[in-house]
Image (tube, rainbow, N blue to C red; front, side, top):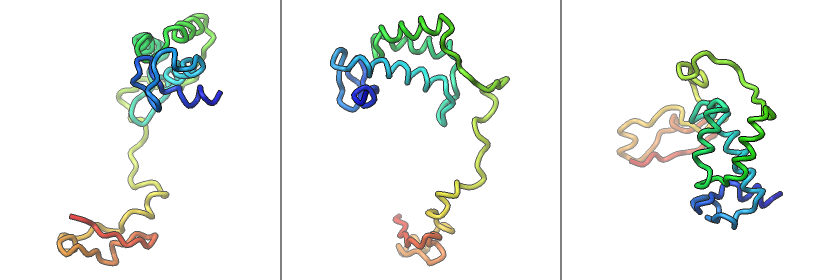
Length: 147
């Protein structure tokens, strides 16, 4: 199981990672996981892209077959989906392109606030390469702001 997990980002054409393996050098389990992971990634909302419909995801995966993904597991995914054995639970959004994925944050998440300066240094402070105590973060880290 571990080689499948470790190597599922390898690509048939050798452009994957972590080792740049090609074709049959990649274990079958890793090639199967790669197809499943790609389908999951395409049908799930991500910070950098909206979820695709299953049909859109399958078209993208078909285009990757033989290049990045192994055609046999891709064919198996198509067959399983065609038989209706894959169900995707999703919340209906009328027009997904018009709605933001998340409401914009008015301030950084609490975890990161303690590491941010209370105020940005002034140009004089930057010129002297010194930062006033008011620019210390709440965690007490004294940061020198380079030019």
